[in-house]
Length: 236
Image (tube, rainbow, N blue to C red):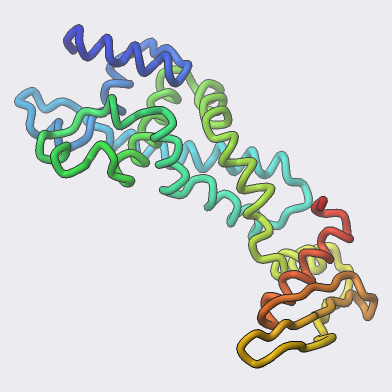
């Protein structure tokens, strides 16, 4: 590893707020296969680290959600985790950390936009997580993940976990043996091309929420959301 590359890695360490004991681990995490395969010395590249990092990331996020969300079902946690560890989320992290400026790519890959390619940058984040784990242990890896992904985690928990309010409400009621959920159409207004529906949701024949929408499905979702708020699971 030459001095220019070493200086570049030091700069990147400042960005991620982690100092590697083994700089070669970081170098490997930031080396794409297209570059390594063009080198005579068979330089290691980040695909094996990516494989490990995927599992480490999933475990860290799974434990965080399990510990934090006491009343959320397995299905809900799975969906929240999927939002956090998806390629788009990892790509957002990569852009924030400027990984595209530091990753080794072949000239061909670079000339075709590799430094901005979603898959390359997302994979590099997973490789980086594995490199930190191997260099400093699980505690360091967990601190890094929960720090750089804090915004993504909070967004997924507060906003995306209720994307399907109707399913969430049904799962919550079933899990806590609360009874039977039923939706009823209260009214239907407007011309055919611009209908507005008003739906009500009942729990054991007790009204717990109402909502409106341009379709019956949308109105049910709105009613379910208001029901969830009335139960106290989210705050308006």
